[in-house]
Length: 297
Image (cartoon, rainbow, N blue to C red; front, side, top):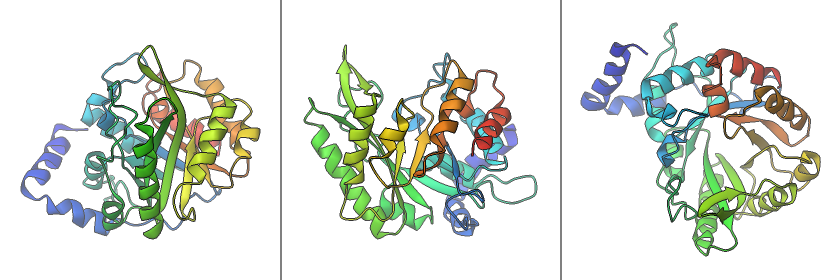
C-alpha cells in the first residue's frame, strides 16, 4: 500500500467519517453466499482485535496494517474468493479502498463481521469472550451478509456459562435479521495456565452438537470447524452448513491443503474460512497460497 493510500484512509476517517457508511450502502452485494461451484472461500482477518498478532515465526506480523491490507486486497482480487471476515476497523478500511478498475474492494464479496473479541489471547478471563465487536444490529445496518462468533467451552470454568448465553443471544438476533450466524465452537481447557482447544474427533463432534443447538432457530446458522481426524464421522453430527478454518500457519502447507481437500468432499462442508495460512504463507506468496486453496473447491 502506498503512503498516499494509507494517508487517504486516515484523512477520510478524520474529516469525512460518514464516507464509511456511504461506501457500505454503495457496496455491490453478492448474489449468493457461495461461488459458482457451490463453495465459499472466505479470507479471515479478525485476529488483531483479540491481540493475536502472531503468524508462524513472526510475533507481530498482523500489527502492520498497511501490509495486512495489501495482503487482503491481493487475496480478495483472486478468482474464486467469495468473501472476507474481519472486525469493523479492518472492514471499514477495505470499504474505503478501490480496485484499479474503480470498483470497491468488497464489491460482490460476502462480508462477515467478527463479534466477540473480548477474550484477549492469554488473558486470565479469556474463556469469557465478551461481544466487543459487531452486534447483529450493526451487521444488518452495514448490509453485511453475516456475523461470526467464537465459542470456547471449558467444563471446568464457570465463565463458560455466560459465553454460551451470549452466543445463543447473538444467534437469535442474527437469525431474526436473516443474516448468517457463523459459530466457531471448541471444547477447551487450560494446560499450564494456557487455554488449549481439544482437537480430538469426539471433542469437535461434541462442540458441533452444542453449537448446532444454540438459539431459537438455526435457519441461518453456519458452523466454522477445524479439520481433524475422522472428519466424516465428525461431520455426521449436524446438517448445518460448515466452513473449515485454517488455524495456525502449518509447517507442512501441502499436507494442510490435502486435509482440506478431503474434508471438502463431505456434503455439509461448503467451503473454507482461512486467515493466516493464506495471508502469511511461509514463502510470502499470498496469490499462490490463495489460488491453491481455491483450487480445492
